[in-house]
Each structure stands twice: as structure tokens, then as C-alpha cells.
Image (cartoon, rainbow over all chains, first blue to last red; front, side):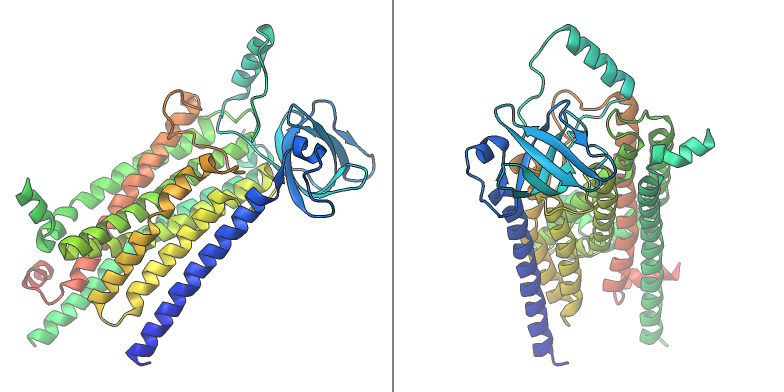
Length: 152
Length: 53
Length: 244
């Protein structure tokens, strides 16, 4: 291989790498910024019909219902202003539970229910032993405070 | 007791591969650095032998 | 002050200086990592939400940290080589790249194995995950660029240039969880004010972070010795060094 040809390959490889990086970054920002809506925006009709987008919010306590026999689960997502019902069939992440912040991917059905094909659970940067969490919960219950800070 | 430790609360198949891959990479780094050093040493010895046969 | 700096730029001085330090560094790293693993896997309590899966943090976070530190080292050393024409800068940059790349891979693999049970997916096109993947490609690019050019000195300069351009990715990785709505949680340790973890969980993590850092320095020293021997194999000091 002549040196000139080698240099050409190197330049092409770098261009390819930079191109891949830019493509990855745009893909990431598209998934993350463009098609993300919270329940209030969905209720206001800002979400595109029949198009995939992401919805994020907190699972309303007591709203999770499972149909017996299959993996279909229904629950309600809230951003503490508006609520959107969600239907999902599949295995839920271990962190999915009532009161947990989640992100669902899917489309909005005509009747206003969001049909999710993927549910991702988000967790925060706090870690603690179960006993500490339990005692924190007890003291929070003793002193009523605004629970659940703003999601997303 | 021991069994509970290896089970990792049901997350064994996620936790242990993580620990394993990290330890393997630590070991690989030691081995690869040592190999690079040996090769460089051999290369320098060859250069020396060629310079004054 | 400046004589010290110039001595650091002298290959025979550095070669003789780092060699004896390596066993001590490795011993310190082994103690810290050994303590961190035992304390983190056995004695630390499980997390209230993630249970025992949270223990992946004890290898995931140090690997990710190391991947960023190694890249910064590589870029700074490359810049020193470019600006001051100090050859040892290029040698340090060349030594840091494979170490950083290997731990970037570990950070990605352990992150995927942590994400599957907790988030519900191995991979998401999330800012933090994507920027860490780009870091891996940057490492590969820098390493192959150095090897691709026939003239070693030009290869060094080109690789240093790419490393310096790519360093913008480092703050992007670190702050991605704050700047964008990310699936990845925020910083636990690197945060001012109240810690986000009790001591029984935090201490093993800090030990692992320090242990990985010291391990990186030790391996970097050994690889630097190899680079110096190879780059200076015709120099008089190498002949004297390998004779003994």
C-alpha cells in the first residue's frame, strides 16, 4: 500500500468515525428531546397521533391493574397536573412500582389511552439501606410534606 | 448463608458477570502492560545486538 | 521548579523513576480494590429499591471514572507533546489509550447488565450512554490513527490532535445527566453538599474509585516504560539500562 493511499484510508476512517458519532448524537437527541411529552402535553393534544413518542411521568398509586392470564397491565401516569392511562404488554422492569418515575415508548390510541411497547424505569442517585428508607418514610408520614418533587 | 451471597438477591446473573468482566479487565491490563514491556525490552536488545555485533 | 519540570521531560530520568514505584502502586491498588469488593459485595446493605443489583455500582462507577481520567490524561499529555515538543508527552498518551479503552468497554458492559433488570433495557440512546459509546470510538480512533501513519512522529502528532479535539466529549459525558432529560441517574459521589449514600455504602465505593485510579497509574507507568524503551531503543541510556 502506498503511503498516499494509506493516508487516504486514514482520512476516510476518521470521517467515518466522526460521521458515526454525529449520527449517534442526533439519534440520541431525536429520541430524547424531540419526541418526549409529559401527560399535560398529551392531554392538551400536543402529541402526534399515530406516531411513536415517549411519555414520562409517575405511576399513580393504586392505579396498576393486571389482567389475569396474560402480561397485559394497565396503569395511570401523572405529572401531578394531568393523568394519562397506559396499556402495556410485556415484562416490566424490576424498578416499576407505584409511585415510581417511568418512561414509556409507544403510540396514543384514539380513545386517549397510550399503548406502550416499552416501559423504562428511572431511578435517582440516592442509595440507602431498606431500614433507613423505612424510617425516612415513617418520619415523612409524621410530618406531612409535599411528596414527589417535579419529575423530568 | 453462602448460597444467599452467591444468589445476590436474584440478581446473580447480572451482578457476577459485571464483577467478572471488571476483574478480567484488571488482569488483562496487567498482562498486556507486562507483555508490552517484555516486547520493548527484546526489541531494544535486538537493536543493541545489531549495532555492535 | 523548572528544573523539576525539565527532569520530568527526560526519558532516562522518568524510566528510572517510575520503575520502582510500580510494585508499591499495585500493592496499594490491590488492598483498596480487595477491601472495596469485600465491603461492597458482602457487608454493604442492599439498596431499598434496587436490592443487591445496586452492587454493580462498585465496578461500574470506577470503570467509568477511569475511562474519563485516562482520556483526559491522554489529551493533556498529547497537548504537552504538541506544544512543548516534549517526546515523553506522546509516550504517556500512547500508554494511556489502551487502558482507557478497555475500561470504557467495561463501563458500557456493566452499565448494560445493570440497566437490563433496573431500567428494563440493556441499551437506550440516552445522552450519557451515547456519549460514553462515542468515547470508546474516540479511543479506537486515536489508537488506530497513531498506528496508521508510517512516520511515528507524525502519527503521534495526529493522534494527539484527535485526542485534543475529542476532549470536548469528557464534560459532555460528565454533565449529560444534568443537561438533558436522561434515563441515567445523576452523580452520587461527585456532588457538593450532602452525600447521596450512607457511609456503609459510600466507603467501599470510594475505596474502589481510589483503587482503580492507583491501578491506572501503575499500569500507565509500566506501559510508559515499554513506550520509552521502544521509542528510544537507539539511545545511549537505553543501552545502559538494558545491560544491567
